Length: 298
Length: 341
Image 1 (cartoon, rainbow over the protein chains, first blue to last red):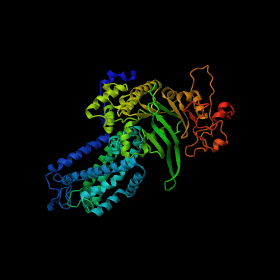
Image 2: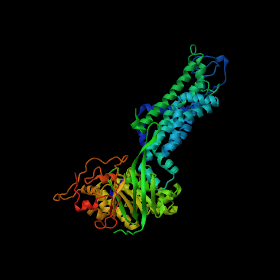
Image 3: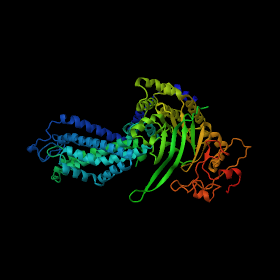
Image 4: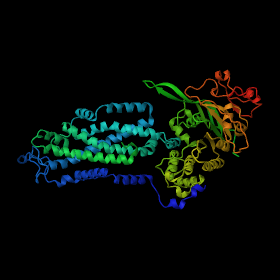
């Protein structure tokens, strides 16, 4: 029994919680990844802008101002004005919350549904697995934007329908990853051990499997926000998402297209905003992936 | 030493565990892996029955099938008079209180994200063994029983050594007051000195708590140390079953003899006849006809290829309860048949 009493005084000193400890480790590694940190800081700035921005801008994003039509960037209108004379800077700031709202919510909904379906498929296997995953395969067979387009076309164009559309095409992405991870964790002996104790499937799935497959889910969620934002603006650009005069970036881009040659700034700034948001989430997501899943580093 | 009574606690009858192999375009079943093929045995209350055999002979599968961790293909598993395989999922969950398992790999068998307290209290919560306010006391008691300190209750698995983790696994199994514990290679992953500690702990617990063990192992030294009776498996079949002394001193099946001849003797002056088998273990997908050992047996005849031998006892040569599945127990014993290497 000497092994049990050895090192008592030494071990007594610190209580290590692996959850907190691993979070600390992730943060420590992430800190040294400058690109990821840049992405992270940008994301924080975007969130702050989305929350406080609308109170700081003085102009109404939707109020036409005929006298100030199609002006280039100036000290009064930082990013210039569009064909209705609306300040593009104000509209981009107001559009920030819409973009983030769509990005976060569509990924959150898609993630929850995808995780549940994936974990159920992976845990129960056999026919349930086959049915769920074949449906996921069908969804995956469509290019994301095309599927979203179809869904929005059926439901009608609005921001909430865009969220529904993007959630649906996000489901298989999460379901696949979660199913794979579930398959490997479910075979571990500790899962058998709680099963042998008489634990219900619900307990096994949510208390023993889910906590141990969180990393790939978090990584996928972060990276997928970028895709969601791109798809959402894409849908609006095609006229299927947010309807005018909502200051949605994709819609702004679309209306700027008509003035592309003479007044490129109308399309340029919303385009740049989209690029920045997507870039920030991609950089941050890549960093998170490298720290949480060093094995899948590509 | 142990208080073996003659009442059967566990009775396994005609247990079969086939794992389907899917193939072809439509994923149809093309064949089965016959991991466990029609075995019957019983475990008496208070005894330790060991299952030995080489990798892939179906010994772990047998343990898992009894616990319904994998649903067996056919057969009956009676525990305390109740057929476990006939129970509904819900009834089985209740029944699991009486029948626990300790796994091989102490690193994989406990959830890395739970403290010892969480592991043990979850087990008690699942089976609702004690009123909530008494559980704390019980956890401390369990820690002491398995030789861990109270101060280690709030630690996570990664803070323990392999031997200590195995003790946590034992404490978890004990927390629900089982009658029987299946030890699936429970000491194989530990180094030898720790193995002895854990084995002695298991023996002590058996004495104190009247436990019955089904001990699955490939290590004959360990089996010799802990068992009352031993069951030898080869390719999903039982080849010999006997009390420990008979099996080690008077093995009757050629396979058992081979297995025993592989135990090293720690004395350089003793010359031992080592039986080396030819070939590999055949695939359990297409096991040999007749006696499954005939492809490697030095005594095999045409009869072995055609007829499957039953487990049998010859009263003149073997003690009561010693049974072997060989057509030629007598002939081999008398020297009438010579091995043909």
